[in-house]
Length: 547
Ligand code: GLN
Picture 1 (tube, helix red, strand yellow):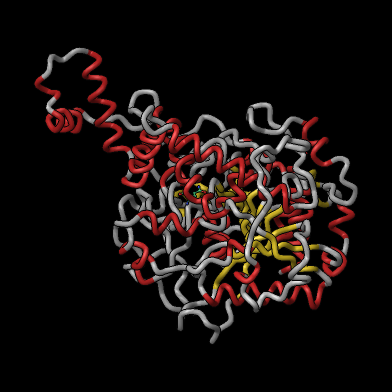
Picture 2 (picture 1 turned 90 degrees about the vertical axis):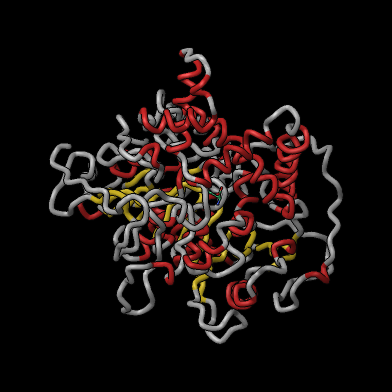
């Protein structure tokens, strides 16, 4: 509409192609429309923006990479898109993803999988399965940023979907505190975990937008009355206040990196040093921790987050449970593509209901079933079944309620190690907490620690890997599709911050060639910094100093 040239750039269902498949719709650079054009007055501050295809734009379809929404156009724009256009964003397109945000490799898409660029100048092969996974579910956004086709890309991060692709594609990926950035116009996956996340090549781009820079007001301050989970203005002030030096202020941003870091205590969570961690990634973790100590005057302190090992299981109960409820509205009537009479008849024949007397309700049921059978991909169906089960009367106590309990314990683990109090839970009674017990001998000796034997020290931030391994090839990912739990494992380091609603940023680090990693692997890895709730400004300052 309005002169914007639109095209779905990737054909549905994996036709042979010679591109990385990272965009779903793309604006033609020679044309503009009201929606794609920045509304900022300051031309020097414009930047290009790619938007994950589960965030509503007025100019492009919003497909969520799902057959159900393949031609869906939102009647309104997401708040975050309007906020960014007001800050100078020029929309370049919408990006490919895992359907509804469910996945870790951007392979569960009706438009086919996203791939990373081949190494060096090699041409993109027609069959991209030899290329590396871009990570997911915001893989298209990560590739758009890595290739320089967008300065900033929006993703969504429910359990790691911005941080994991950032780590795989060697860019920066930031998940803000839950409730900071409006989710109005963002298609929900699991409401209590969903956040809008940001990808860029430099931390400073993201920090400018969140904290504010020059004449631009920071996004952190903007309450959106249209999103009931967006923190009220009063709560925002309360969270930022009473924290001298920790506020969202530009003074922090003007400090030199060395000054930002001096005197900080960075926690190294022992439970993240898992057996499955790729040795090359463990090496870079140790290298950065050592560098922070020797060159920046940071203390690296071992900390224990004992509930970490249950966090992944809790996440994969809670997220599918919320998803199964959210996705109930896609039935071909209220939302989504309606199955045709042929597919409806086929579905009826399959479950024998054609023989039953055709009441309106039965016909409606068949239409729902046929639309949902055709409209969702396999991974989404798996999550709906899982969520339906864990919420059922027979399983509720053992799964959903236990997972909620683990979630509270994960948050308490974080609150115990951070020096800053959690402004949302300040002064909570803590009946379930036990004294931490952990074995320091577990720790890899190569991570030099300050004062290994002392009592547990409180810390400002946590440092850990973003993902346990470097990116696999798409061929490896597809070969393992029969065992989805393996893909879920990639999220082991990202879901704890999601469960606790904390800000976290993945920054790229090089995995040293000739290190202990698998030979010949290109060396992209991400390290993750996690901060206390609403400590986003300091977190981004530290991340910027680190890279
Ligand atoms: N990989 C995780 C999942 O599939 C996280 C997804 C996300 O953050 N959107 O649920």
